[in-house]
Image (cartoon, rainbow, N blue to C red; front, side):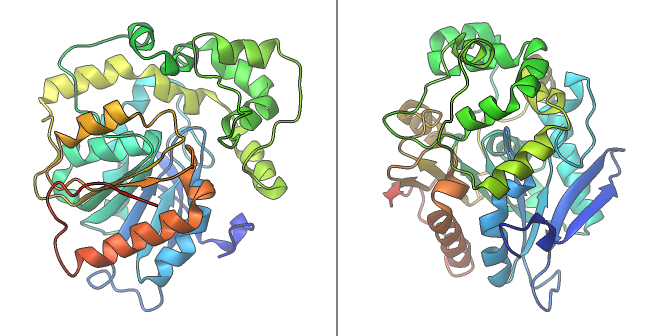
Length: 339
């Protein structure tokens, strides 16, 4: 398994019981036995693919874990329905449960980043009996809301989410596909004093359509960049549909009367970069109220793309935490630590 060679991982493509086809990496440890080796299911966010976990797969396999990493719906080699309703979190979680069924895995450790973080948090509500532990990166847990709030109103309260108003507009799919190089360079820029803040309302659309092209430094090697570009060139409707599901998600969660709290006995870890604008202290502190076995680790000076920016820290912290679960239960409401 070489992070610079996507083909060096074990790829599979299977049709799930939900009718959707998923491409995923399925990496088994030496001497794998389903009753002795835990399964870790890694869920990527936007605009990412299975490859976002390239630095973690090998080391976690060497810990003796089976690592399963899908291209999520709309990405890479996975089905790409055009209807936003197909991307509701309930349906995504049903797909993930079906993937575990296909692999004959009853319970797994779920790890998610960005949209994947939100998705695995909801998986713990929709399928609480399918998790050994829950790990969320960069996007804190938020409980289901009893009141629906459109993204336009959300962006007025949280200006750093203004870009989501643009993403919710179907027009953005073609805009971004047509300016994919510029978009990727913006999204994968490292956190530093010269970073371009594209999050306020209207800024990203202006940068894509009207700002002159220039070489922005980014976190990817040339090989990595080329691979991402090739995969995302397959279409941006699916990836952006995640931002067009807020009403569907709200209605499904309200109808199911999903609880606000995560299961009280579920081991939980949150990792976040102190330079990540999406992980605000207010939202992080709010999330603590809904999680009994809360633990978090702040990674100093790092931004949103933790699996790349802090690849060694993420790999080691999560590996050590998972090994610790087999020895003792984590302390209730443990205060966050820093790296």
